[in-house]
Length: 129
Ligand SMILES: [Cu+2]
Image (cartoon, rainbow, N blue to C red; front, side, top):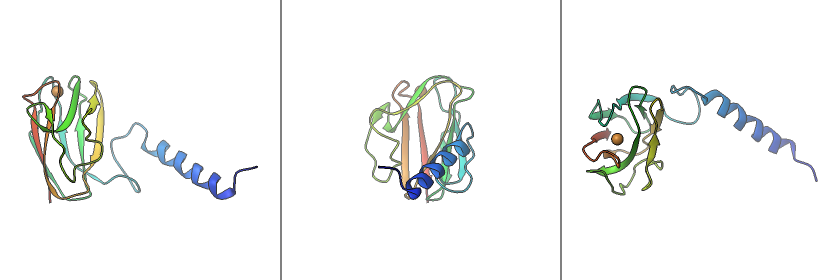
C-alpha cells in the first residue's frame, strides 16, 4: 500500500506552512490572522493593559523582555471559560518563558479578560469588534 499523490501534496503544503511560520511573530498569508496589536509582558506584570482589534485579527503577546507567565481568560489569576475566546485559552493556560513571542488570533467579537495564573494581579483586556 502506498501513499496517494494527494496525501503527499497535503503533507508537503503542511511542512511548508510550518517552515514559513517558524521563528517569526509576523503572519503572512494563510493560517492565522494579521497581528493588529501587541501586549508586552514584563516581569510579573502586563506592560500593556489593553488591546483593541477586529474579529479575525491577532494579538501578539511579547514576552521578550519579561519572565515566566501562564495566561488564561479570566481575572485575578483564575481561569474563566469565555465564549468566543481563542481555543488556545484553556484552563491549563498558555505558558510563556522569557523570550517567547506568541501571536493569537481572536475570531469572535467580544471583550476578553486575560490574567496570569502565576501573577493574579496581572489583568489585561482584549476588545474585539
Ligand atoms: Cu504572569
